[in-house]
Amino acid sequence: MKRKLISSFLCLSALAGMTMTAGAAYTEGTYTGTGTGHNGPVSVEVTVSADAIEDIQVTESAESACIGDVAAEHVIADVLTYQSLDVDTVSGCTISRMGFLTAITDALSQAGADIDALKAVEIPEKTGEERTIDTDVVVIGAGGAGLTAAIQAAYDGAKVVVLEKLPRVGGSTVTSSAMLVVGGSKLQEEAGIEDSIENLKEYLKDRSEGIADEEWNNYYAEHINEILDWYLDLGVNYNKDLILIQGTSTIPRAHMPVESGRELIPRLVEEAEKNGVEILTETPAVSLIKDESGAVVGVNAEDHGAAVTVNAKAVIIATGGYGWNADMRAEYAPDAADVWPVTSPGSTGDGIVMGTEAGADTVFKGGFIGWKVVSPAYGHTTAVGAPIYGAANLIVNEQGDRFGDESLDYPFLYDEMVADGSETFYFIFDSGDKETKDLVNNVSDTVNNLELGVEAGVAFKAETLEELAEVSGLADLAQTVEKYNAAIEAGTDEEYGRDTATMIPIQNGPFYALQCKKAILGTFGGLNTNMTGEVVDAEDNAIPGLYAAGEVANGEFFPKMYPSSGLALGEAVLFGREAGKSAAAYALSE
View 1 (spheres, rainbow, N blue to C red):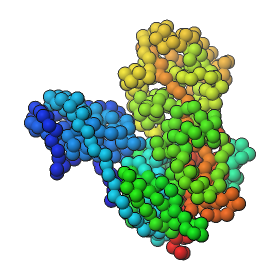
View 2: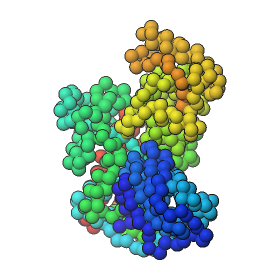
View 3: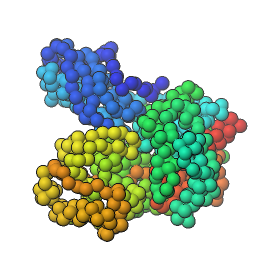
View 4: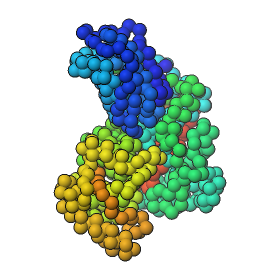
């Protein structure tokens, strides 16, 4: 099994065959080092002899399963094996990797190590194994859609292999809230929330812009309860106390697990492995294999440069969207052409390319999930990035002026940002903001997070608003805050009509300005499929053996503007299940 999950409190002993660094000299002992990971502080204990790094243990980490664990595993294995700090980026785990490497470097510095010498020790490139794999169904992509499709195909009796190009599994789902929009659920009933499948259908119709496919939307409303019930059976902690209002709905129907995507993905991986699914990470698919009849019969993939041929009776593409492909964004979502993507780094549009090369039709409407982010390095699940989601209050443009109702749902706020024209925006905080609860349910200290932002160079701090305006360049800030506070006191926001009950006065210094830029959280459009997951050509004929699900094939379901948090995952996993059923039935009928 190539993919490996390890506990957050990782212990890797020195590996056999460990190479010594020429001239390395340490003061023998065990040293504690610290760093800052994706979700906060990480600590390690590093044991050294006089001439070698002998052992590394992670003693503190709040990093997510499937991300932090993978980063720690790769970093520690490389440091121990090669006695080097020249550790490459672990794709999809960059911030976690930096945190662990910083902590190890800190500990080695205390041991008297020559850090520059350790960084100069080159780590050889990995080499793969050329091989051929025979299976019933191969799934490309190990995110929410791909894992769900793989599990369902395995449930139905198929032998399943999953190819994932990143070192980690989880796609965009593992860093998401893992919300599911469900109408009329058992959990809503337990919570005393009145809702129904019909209510959800009406909401989706109201938000469809006349371009989302009503049949797809209705199918979702009628069947997404089954996915929620299944996840509950798997032990994912969705509960009646965490059902949120999202989008423009007035009904709480966005169901969220306590530990968000970092809880959901490990459960899906566990269920996949229990049912015999083989998951191969760092094995990107390159192209589809077709036979003389035009049927798709496998995948050409790579393992660190070595060819991997997967012969299969059915192929499911679940590679995510095209958020990290600037050319595709410019062509298919021009309103998001020049903004930062904060989707999975694996979302490069490669599945769309492979599908169209095999003859697939596509569906694009210019849609995407408009979002906001401090920077690509500090997204919504990081300590630095969290305050603009969990404790956001006043937002200003580059002049220090308000530009709209800050409480709008984030796709609408994105449009307000576009209309304003500023490149950078700022969230304004005072020292009275004590607690941040971000969109993946992490609770942290807001001021501490802001101080981390100042250290990272993405926030400004000053004792007075006038000083903050000066150091940040937000010329109108003091005047804006005065008007903002006055609106709260008067009980009326005459500028933008925001409910003043949602506004908190900015009063107590020191004050902070945390930067924010436009971003995208996901893309809409891709391969054209029917609701059973079959990929179709331009004449609406199914391509034998080819299926797709998730962000790579969500064009029919979504309009241009994202209707609600929880629909992207819901659409992906529901229709991932359908693709898994169809692919298994086709493969086993051959």
